[in-house]
Image (cartoon, rainbow, N blue to C red; front, side, top):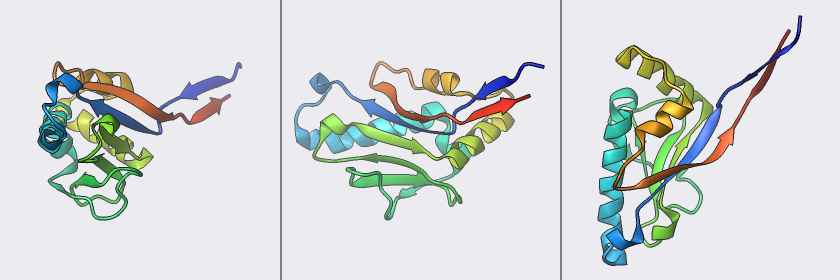
Length: 143
């Protein structure tokens, strides 16, 4: 029997950016960032699946200063932005545990499986751009 290679997504980071033409001045960025976060959370059902939004104390992704977590969960999930640096955009970080939990709960809530391609398609918007910037891919060989 030929060995089979199984490839999946373990953890990942996504960045949301807003076109600079939509930002009047740097002072409006925090409000735009918060509005973008709100839209992203609604589009992906983050609050439904993880729980209530709260300020993230400590462990804000490197380079970012304002972060949020959702629910009181035993895994790392964060959304963050820097109020003075529009170019950094808004970062979304899923740990392996949070991604696994999200996929499981999505399936229960929506009666359909979740994968990275479907998640990325949920984030398509005229108001912001999303891109995956870091993926950890576990490889499993099955014989």
